[in-house]
Image (cartoon, rainbow over all chains, first blue to last red; front, side, top):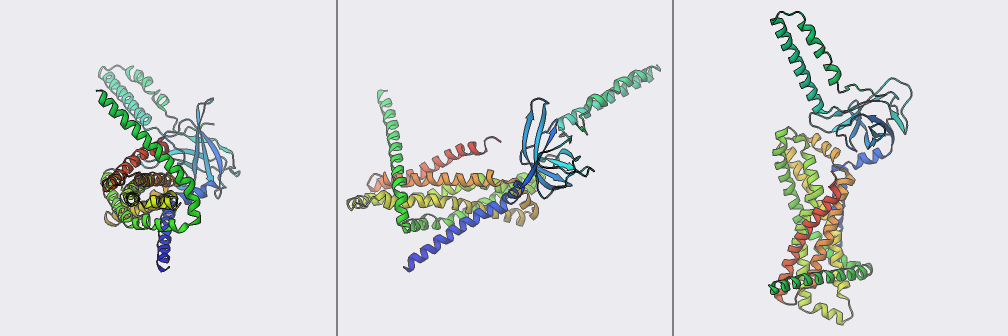
Length: 196
Length: 261
């Protein structure tokens, strides 16, 4: 009888140890504590022209503090926009209607997240609401190509201007100008692309 | 040439026969064994002691060292990118998703599976199983079922223990020895490791491996040729087949669980 009691104790210790490990993995290693909090939230949606590589479950933050998560990413085949569903924790229920949502990147190579910049309106976002002011993700290739394009344009204009002055021809600077002028317009990546 | 084909056919049919026998065997254990265990839970308890409790030491120590190695190697690569703060994510993700279930299953088949095979095989060799049948005691219920269910119950617990101790080992090396920031280690880990995606899938994996390893172990023992050589071969086969099956199924499960991203 004594031995079976010992056996039971050891099995009990083993099972408790296993359950403690599972609990540790759930609470300390994974985000279960956050997930249960986020599930009690309200959903709002936002339209973006380009979401870059934003993923479901990416954080939604306001002033750098996480207030929710991205709960869904869809494509609208009529307007060719990306519709992003945001689940905001219910405790943050005073987000103004004219809040701007922008997709930013954590660090240089980090994950993309949605940042909310509050507006000034008195009415607040509710469940099923829409964020109208959005700013698309910055796609690194587009920025670099725009930069290079501007550089090339600028360089061309400059060299043209130089040759023009060398030839002492007064019309040359004016001829170079129209070439340089469209650069900002065509190269624009709709940076503060406040799409209505 | 005809001889070659005959041998191939013989091997194929033999393999299929064995697979069929193993399935009937398992159906019998599942149908008959569960009810029997409810009547006599003590059988299960003593087997959990032999299979689970006595494996805690090897699983815990291995987990600690695997976690510490992950900490060292991860730091080496991540510090090149100035990303050593994500060390916690790397250690925890590899442990919870892959190494925890897989390495535990391999250790478990070596520590517990081989013992189960040898025990049941020797019982068969010394005609204890036949003796039980003579007394109208079903050896599948009395001997095999408690061992099988003990293995299935122990594996997820052991794998969770392995992962936890491994994370601790990674923490010890990363934060204690290499100077990674304490807060960043845990907060990045918590931000990136998803409970359902990573932890629950890891537990499912370890449960599947528990079924596979214990099934192979008890079946190889039950199916062993009743000689000394037969038992030794069955023990070897049990460990080798378990390793194959665990690694193969790990690929399948990983592709199903994490394949889409």
